Image 1 (cartoon, rainbow, N blue to C red):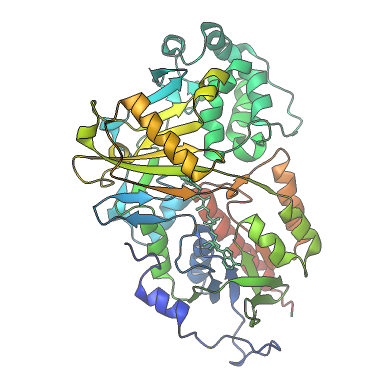
Image 2: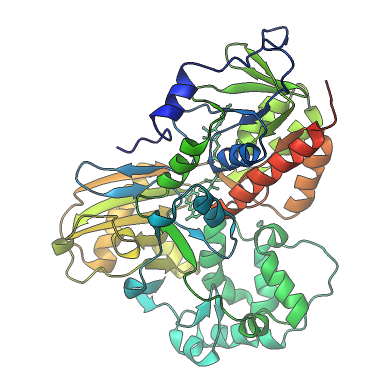
Length: 481
Ligand SMILES: Cc1cc2nc3c(=O)[nH]c(=O)nc-3n(C[C@H](O)[C@H](O)[C@H](O)COP(=O)(O)OP(=O)(O)OC[C@H]3O[C@@H](n4cnc5c(N)ncnc54)[C@H](O)[C@@H]3O)c2cc1C
């Protein structure tokens, strides 16, 4: 197994010796006049990024992580038989530069890898049919009409209506939010939901009738306003050169571990925070630690109770943020169990009623083909995604689907699963206003940051952590104690 703690040094700092900034319960500082550190709650990618930013600015900090490793949802496991299993993120988008920038800053360039071009085949499951994913797409937007019309991913009428988006006038720019479903129906027609929802809502594991366009996909609203059409706008905007996604040879866990290993401040593993105050935190067990600011990077459902006593209004707003659930089943096979070559990236499942009546599966990723080094030669590693269902049921269904779709013979060599039920932030319509209310309800030296608020992808989490660090440092220049 990987050392997920960021190295023995980080763990030692975290679990044992601490460096003398602890307060007595009365809040007296033990060590004289040095400035109080900024306190960071949570050691996921957001918290680690906040710590890194503070370190770059020469500001002392203490990071508290409830668990016994850094990275939060970013978890990579190496099995004894040579597979590399990602529990959550397997790659991140390069269009938002912040995660790649941080990876460079901590010296990870030699680990950079990208999804393999030579296996870049994708399918779209509609009914019983495994269709080729339409070529020449930018996310869900077809860059040419002909290949999309030939694809069969919607009915002929649905495909024509989809492309007629080019003639739908833009909505007046009122700044009002709307759901993904309302946006898609308005611009691409109702049937388009069957194709767009698996691609778009899948990232957010969201109900498309609730998912906020302004929070999740502002780029499509901007294209509508600028070009009068999402399709015309996408075609007018040149595609970025080079790869779109990035990962690490040793898995995503390498990223968190590398950042943690470069942190020279105090990192405390196995240290849950119970309560956040204007001037510090209370730890489980009652110890109080004073700080010049507090950055709370835990998900909203953990943050709300921490804020309840000292910031009741912010706590109520944070507690009103919703979450969705997902389960990922990991299956390992020998390549010879498959009658076909599994050199493909995976498949997406249509959201139409007929397909949904047959399967609760949302998508499959063929990890062994998508990224190098995920399985030993001659083996296939799959991740099968479901919504909020019981992992045992998901596992049985995943095995059945792999048999039905790919004709696999026999049982998997092993299986595992990642249970993210209730753990995926749901950005509901009005989310950005909601987050603005939370910010207003907190003093400037206390910030909440992370996947619950300003983007679930790792680049957004890195940016959120670093931004919160800069804000708290700015705020704490004015003494508050
Ligand atoms: C199945 C799945 C697949 C994903 N795939 C991708 C992908 O391919 N690409 C991508 O960019 N993103 C992906 N994501 C999203 C991304 O992984 C997360 O949004 C991101 O890792 C969240 O980071 P975070 O630091 O904000 O929160 P978390 O990772 O949740 O970290 C919060 C930390 O706070 C700690 N904590 C909790 N309570 C306390 C407490 N009381 N005191 C102290 N610490 C506490 C937790 O232990 C945890 O370590 C995926 C997510 C999931 C679930």
